Amino acid sequence: GHLYLIMQLVSGGELFDRIVEKGFYTERDASRLIFQVLDAVKYLHDLGIVHRDLKPENLLYYSLDEDSKIMISDFGLSKMEDPGSVLSTACGTPGYVAPEVLAQKPYSKAVDCWSIGVIAYILLCGYPPFYDENDAKLFEQILKAEYEFDSPYWDDISDSAKDFIRHLMEKDPEKRFTCEQALQHPWIAGDTALDKNIHQSVSEQIKKNFAKSKWKQAFNATAVVRHMRKLHFLLTSANWYTCLCKILATQGCCEENVFLDAKLFGSL
Image 1 (spheres, rainbow, N blue to C red):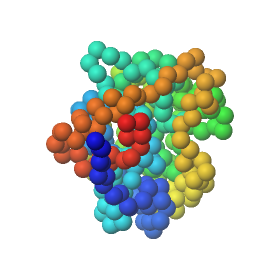
Image 2: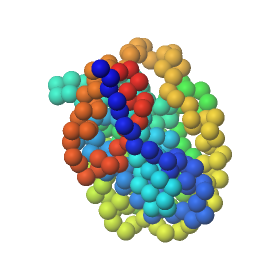
Image 3: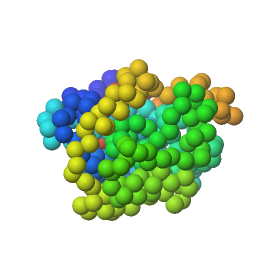
Image 4: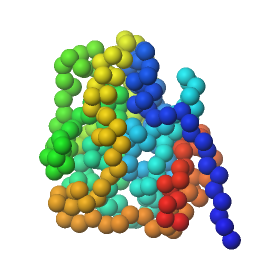
C-alpha cells in the first residue's frame, strides 16, 4: 500500500522577506510575531515535542495577506521528549542553538525558548546577538551567553523588550522562561511594546547580516565535529511518525500554526 500525505500550501513567504518589504515596522509588530511563535511552540511542548531548530527562515507566512498568520515549519530535527529520557544529540543551527547543547549537557524543551529569544533579538535590531565566521568562536560566544544591546540600534527599543529577551536568553535553562511564562510577560501580554517605526534600521541590518547565502544554510554536523566530542544521527523513521501522529491526533488552539512540511517525512 501507499501512504499519501496532503500538505497545506504555505505561500506567504519567509519572515525576513516580509519585514524588509514592509514600509512600516514597529516593536509592537515584533511582539505580535513572537506571540504567535510562543503560542505555537507552547502547543508543541504541551504535546511533548521539542522543535530543536527554531530560526527565522523556519517561520513562514501562511498567505500573502497583510494579516497572515505565522506557521512553524521544518521538523527535520524535532524530537519527542519521552518521560524518563533525556535529549543529548548535538543539533540545531549555528547562532540559534542553546548553550547547554554546545556544552554537551542533557537538555530539554528549554532549548526552543532560547532560540525564540534569539529570534526576538534579531526582530528588534536586524542582526544576531552572536556572530563569527568561525563556528568554534561563535560557539564560544554562545557558551558564555554574553551579548549586548548595542547603541544606536537599541536606543529606541523599550526596556521591557530587553527584559523579555534576557529572560529567554538566560544561560541557565532552569531559570530560563518557558513559553507559558514568556506569554505572560508585559511585552507580550501588556502594552509595553513601542509603536515607533524602526523599519529602516532593522531592514538595513537584515539585508546586511542575513543575505540568503548566509542565513539559508542548513546545519552541517561535520562543521562542528572539531568542537564536539561526539555527535549522533538524529531521529528514526518511527519517531518521525510518532511526532506526526501526535500533532494530527490532538486538537489544540495553536494547531493551525504548526506547518507539517515535506521535510518531516524525509526518512519514512
